[in-house]
Amino acid sequence: PAAVYVRIRTSFLSLLLLHLLLSFTLPTANPNQTMAHASPEEVKAAAEDPGAIILDVRTKEEVAEASLTSRPFKHCSCTLEDCSELMSKAEEYMPDKNAPVIVFCRSGRRAGKAKEMLEAKGYTKVLNAGGLTGLDYL
Image (cartoon, rainbow, N blue to C red; front, side, top):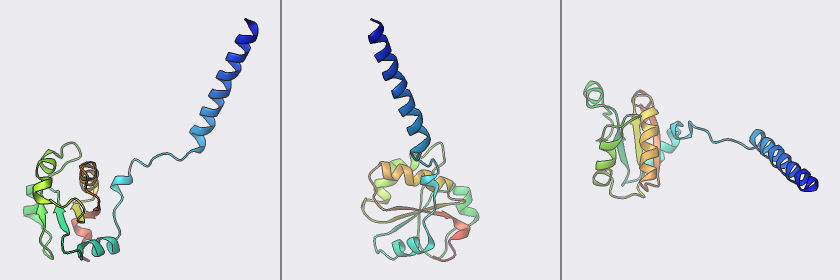
């Protein structure tokens, strides 16, 4: 019985040590990865695709105050807490899940959330273009 106890304790301590080592050495997922903005070059290249959709996820009030004037865009509100409007209209607005979807908002945070939601719905080329004020290159 004492030998079994020693083996169990040794195994437990070995597993605990392994867990601690891995916890401190393995890279962790970046929680802001979906919030990362695509580069202007990536956005411009995607926008050249004839099937590309530019999607503004700001509120209707924000769109009324200032809009993208250089290109046509679709509008569908999405907040960090609620993207239900986007989810219900996604396939109507963007039927081709392999076409580029360029998403923007005011700062890029809601666009990041929209990107995450669209990718979960099967869209393969979603770019977070950041905020409207940074899209003067489009």
